[in-house]
Amino acid sequence: MLDDDLKQQLAAYLERVKEPFEMVASLDDSDKSKEMRELLQEIAGMSDKITLKTDGNDARKPSFTLQRSGSGSATQLRFAAIPLGHEFTSLVLALLWTGGHPPKEAPEVLEQIKALDADLDFEVYMSLSCHNCPDVVQALSLMAINNPRVKVTVIDGGLFQNEIEAREIMGVPTVFLNGEFFANGRMSLEEILQKVDTGAAKRDAEKLSAKAPYEVLIVGGGPAGASAAIYAARKGIRTGVVAERFGGQVNDTMEIANYPGVPETDGPRYAAALEQHVRNYDVDIMTAQRVNKLVPATELGGLVTLQLDNGGTLKSRTVILATGARWRNVNVPGEQEYKTKGVAYCPHCDGPLFKGKDVAVIGGGNSGVEAAIDLAGVVKHVTVLEFMPELKADAVLVDKLKTLPNVDVHTNAQTTEITGAGGKVSGIDFKCRDTGKPTHVPLEGVFVQIGLVPNTEWLGDTVARSKFGEIVIDAKGATNVPGVFGAGDCTTVPYKQIVVAAGAGSTAALSAFDYLIRTPAPAAASHEEAVAA
Image 1 (spheres, rainbow, N blue to C red):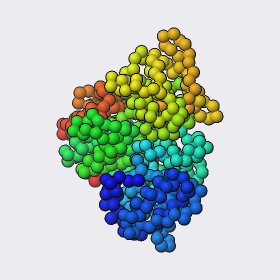
Image 2: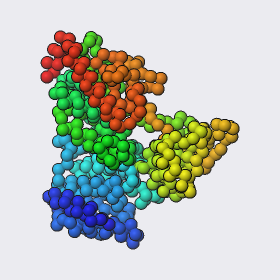
Image 3: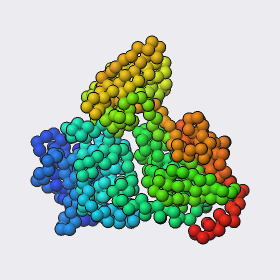
Image 4: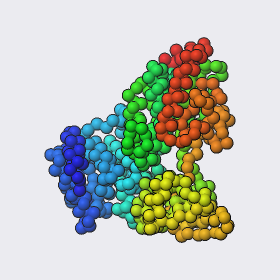
């Protein structure tokens, strides 16, 4: 099952296992059960602290659990999957954590997990090609290993297609809690804990509000925000980052091959590197937090206030807005109704769920054509709809697309409706912009790939924005609000690229530092900083 390189890596990791445990497999005569048996035998052969038993009787076959030896240390983590591909790291971490190797999470987070006082039965559906799934799988696995009242079953949707169809799951990761829908899409451990620990939001709000004012506070943890944090921290000034998740939209990017000095990487790997780089400096990172309001300083050089969804507040002499962007909706009837029921935005994550089915891709730019090429290797047929007279993707991608026999391309095509039946997508309607002729294509999935929209609605009229919602900035990243700067995809900077965003983040940080040294703090703000410190 594992090639020599993976075996060597895994054997090195398993040397860190301190406590004995068992892998208990539930198998049948299927080929997938044989593959699982082979994988588990290889793992058991790498450590004398890991034992394999094949007498499990779980209804889901093949599947296996990780069980610590001894009483009082039971865990309820099951993999109804052969966790390779993007989930190989999830498997390695689960083995290490079960074997007593300490996780890297903060002690207070682990204590929060152990203190959960409820029976929580999670089922998480994923695909092995989904780069959004490992975060959720690893977060829930950690919860199951550290709290015996938390049960987690990790299910490969491609392996248990009958469950995918019965539960009408058309997007991963999808999580059920105690038999009811819980959430869909990428989530961090902190976000999951906030949803199940009802007192967490209040505690977080009190903790955040008690923090001393910052000199530079960055909203957003993508390339622009990370670059800003690094440049600000290197100036020796008090720096904070508040974000929903570190990495931002980069986490949803499968391949990055145009960043100077990094010939090839992927979004999750690059996002992890960004976070590690920032953590090398004295930066206060606050994730799983959403900012909903900015209150400008009442006087030049004073404190800007950020209000959070949980009721907390943060203050800083300067603020850098680096909130990035999100997938743009096509805004036709059926899109919202059938979201996660056939309407999807991540072909790498959700493509395997449509194996052997007909799908459409809306959008003929790079992202749309790349999605069509990727999907063509999995699904039965792909219909590409482009609003403009020609595809807008790079020529090399268009040439590749034209070689695929199971792809049809319609240009000058205006999508008018995503149709459905029985609670899920059944087709797509579009019309030719030249003739007005309507067309209906029966299919089961629609992937929307028409660009991005900036995450700036929460600013209202506080900060000047363009007609597209982008924060208006000057050459130094300054906005119309003193002490407030902008960087990256959420601004009017041309070309929404990772390398451009990173450069804009450094520009904003240097401009914020220049503002600080040229704008003395009013006496009231200086006193507040001193008292808080």
